Image 1: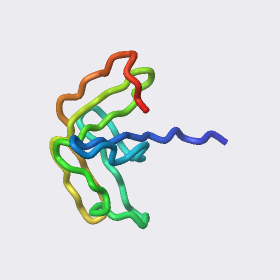
Image 2 (image 1 turned 90 degrees about the vertical axis):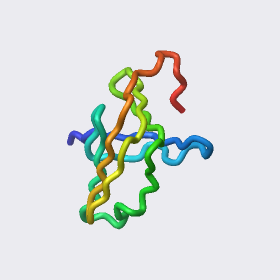
Image 3 (image 1 turned 135 degrees about the vertical axis):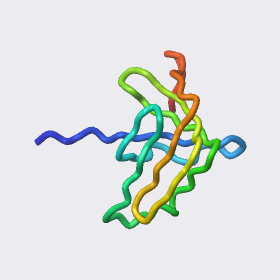
Image 4 (image 1 turned 135 degrees about the horizontal axis):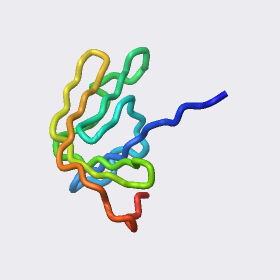
Length: 95
């Protein structure tokens, strides 16, 4: 049985620190990410995501960083748009 890989992100807030480590997301690209809450206990309003939060994730051997530009919540989905997506240096310590 092949287990699909889990796509996760890390969220940090300036002046606060890390908000989420390895937060699973359903879709992720350089423009944004989606968390689908269909059939889950956690609802879109439970996620503390704000404009200006820093998002980091692995894309193969590369670590990318972006800033949250917008957050939209519906009844069963969180859709986040990102800006200023840039690769971090190879020697960046992710954790």
